[in-house]
Image (tube, rainbow, N blue to C red; front, side, top):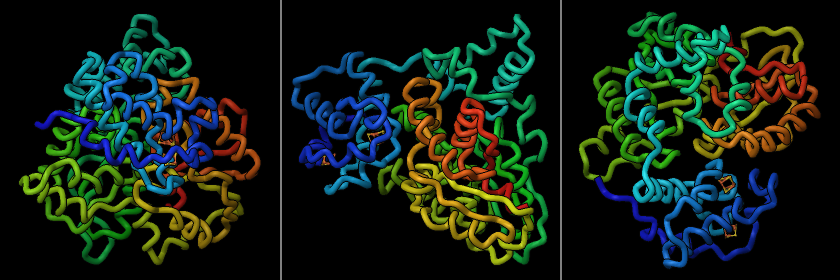
Length: 416
Ligand code: SF4
Ligand code: SF4
């Protein structure tokens, strides 16, 4: 496999004219005011490395790894420099030079590719966390994967379900009441292990529109490994999923995790043409849909009845910028009977969760979350809706921390 080489992107990096327009959109810069935290500063760092003015030493780790990869800077950048993609490539080269942490090797090589092992690890964590039994507390060491602010980060997840969703809904085919559509349901790790209400609701919803719904035996989509810069591990996970999905006769592959949806749609970019995997990835990714798209295209979406309720919406980065799903959620919510939709200020700003970012960078993510909570409070909504389990987890934590009465839930839960 090719080695990462950020110098291949020197021209792209040099397109930065240092205008500073990215400052206004960057949640990290808006929280810290540090130039190293904004796209302009990060690109200057990459340029200095390529030009040999800086070395790949652990000192460059913080500016490389404290980016949320939210993509907001690119949307505000006249030359549209894809800073988050460049950061991922730089992380990959950094890991090649400095080395992967053993805990990441455990996670990406030995847990995420194997759902059953992941379930066992999650169960150990759940027992330790939910019971507080001292001799199981070491199981929580697994969460140290995510960083140094462990004691605080440990508060982010309130409770872990003791059994994964897959143990409750059975893999394989479920018959639905739809006409002819054969749906594959891609269960992301976050829904499988934590946001299970979303998974139950999505399955119910898909059974209404599909003739059959196959709960796929997929593994992690690979996005956590990719974001960390472990491109090899991400490709391995993608290959596994491609062979599982391509073996099924499906019209559409639906997931209720916007991060998974966005990454599955990007699978062709993981493999160079004319690799066989690239062809397979093109074929599979063309059939992937975020459940938000499915709900948006459902004529019957407005039939769920709700007591009068005010709702607002948080756009996950991987839905709004990753997939361009900016208007669909509002249109869905506006047509639901009994629902008053109040748009959220800065609705497409990252919540600070950013996958596992909140665990690794607790303080920074908390500052980003506090801003989101202040906007949420101003909305006065009863429900905060979104479409990504990592956002649900982090937003729910924010609501608890700020003592708000708003309930956070997945858009699928509103539809059933
Ligand atoms: S907006 Fe784009 S061009 Fe301007 S400073 Fe930021 S990254 Fe550079
Ligand atoms: S991707 Fe997000 S956090 Fe990273 S530099 Fe751009 S705006 Fe800032």
